[in-house]
Length: 84
Image 1 (cartoon, rainbow, N blue to C red):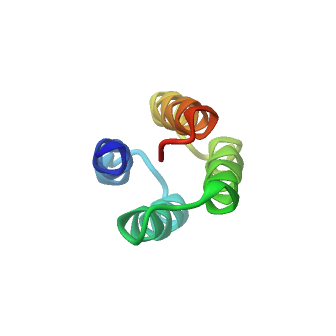
Image 2: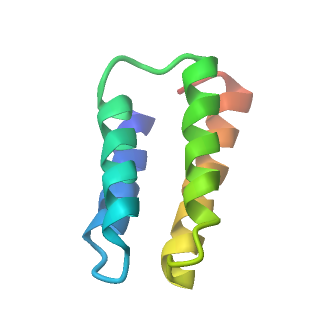
């Protein structure tokens, strides 16, 4: 299932010591959302929007930001295919 791969990527970011605590909390909330029932397109859009906001945080490291962009790209691809 695609959710598992996305959750693993987000968990890797959460475990990164260079990621600020407020971002870790936001990512953990998104992980909980993804672990629930399969998100519909509206929920997927809100997850993508939240990740976009997180990636714009000036305190996040460039490697973590790049990983978040990768997750956003994957989610957008799943949303386009309609297979989240």
